[in-house]
Length: 298
View 1: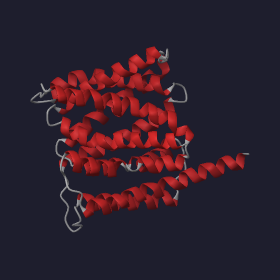
View 2: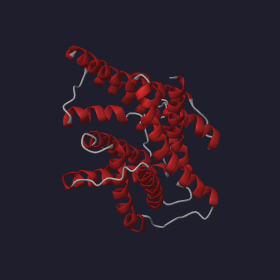
View 3: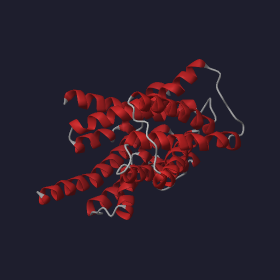
């Protein structure tokens, strides 16, 4: 149990650090090219893993359109908007906005999966939105100037929620590794022409350390960390694991301080507490209701 929590915590640290690493990478690579290169190394890693585990499977024709949609929206646009946003957006604020993904996912699940909306969910959403407004306004609630990059991060959050819903639907018929591999392949194919048409000018680093960071984050963040999380999540309480995942914004704050020398403000801490509190509040009731529902069937 202790080992499982330790490994899950490492995953959260890796994902929280991704905001700062992304901020560093977009200074030396143009965003669409960075997306293409990252997807290339993710696909290479997942392909090797699939062959090694002998799980390289074909997608049935009836699921092909859904996988293509997932690859374009949930993979390419998700990663592309993330890097476009980080060109100007603050990594800590970006992490806080993405922390609200479970709330949007809950609303989408209510629409498309017929899951129940609760008062706790609505109340938690309000608290989280207040926290985001407080952080974006930098404590001055009477006036607010929204960085354009944050609008791209909001798009990242929306596409991430769509990806979760699509993956949940497809996972009923296709194993997660196959879904991830093929959707990333689609994202890679779309990113190749996009890199040469959207990026003006096209920027690419000649520094070995930048390439090492790019490859390392691609493989570790989207490959190894996801696999470690999926393997260990079954050994711990789901609600506690969910709380662990909400620590990503705080990790982004600390990594921003260490690597970017960005001071942590009281406004960010207060907004973070509101956002994370709102997410916990909105998701707790859903887990509790599901547990009661399972008990009523036994």
